[in-house]
Amino acid sequence: MSRYFIDAAQIVDSHIEITGEDAGHILRVLRYEAGDSIILCDGAGLDYPAIIIETGKDRLIARLDDGYPSKGEPDTKVILYQGIPKSSKMDLIVQKCVELGIHSIVPLNTSRTVVNLSEARKIHKRVERWQRIAQEAAKQSNRGIIPQIGFPMTFSDLVTSALHPIKLIPWEGEVNLGLRCYFDKHKNDIYREARAEIGIIIGPEGGLSYEEIDLAKKHGWVPVTLGARILRTETAGIAALAVIMSNMGEME
Image (cartoon, rainbow, N blue to C red; front, side):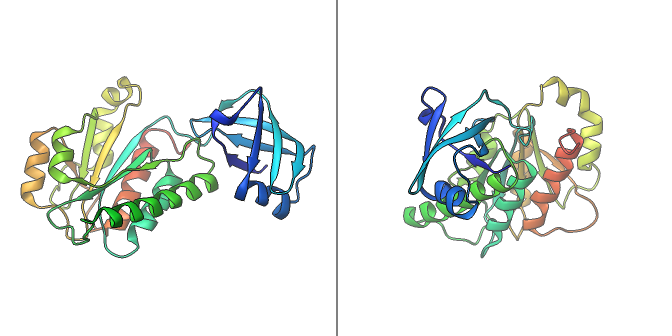
């Protein structure tokens, strides 16, 4: 059954009017009519079965039944801080991480970041693009929310201010503590946090410097290894997220 995101504030007496691109897709592409059923998601984790009761040109009105938690939304909240990569690699990272269940993504400026996003106009343009990609990926993968793409942070600001109970850095310089071993070792503590937020930092193409790792460790971030193979920056976050979701039972 087709599924669309809506703004919950527009629901009035269990009815909502849908216009624009979504209405056009429902009416012209799918050729739905009054009496057909759709699923509407409020973007806050609730899905609503709905029936189309009226149609017009590029608009329709649907009646909503009681909402229920979105099955595609994980309980585990993972926040990815991604060192800004070159070219269009961030597009892939956003798309695939949203599919895997990321809660939000924050672009990260590090000492080895080579992409210049110093101009406010450039920053807004890039973030808007990444947010559109996140929205499309959320629709495709039946997410209950549209993960938010934040504005870039500096590495030092992030590591000194983040309050996540679990803070991890996949890093090629760590050879002893694997990501799966970390979860095996701390599983009871992690679940006692009621699946609290997990922050994860991925460096850019050039990786993170020893100085950055030392600063992060001083503020409670834990370096982990993803194995003997060196992964590209656009692969590392996706791989780490898949391991986390699997260990948290979100891939069942």
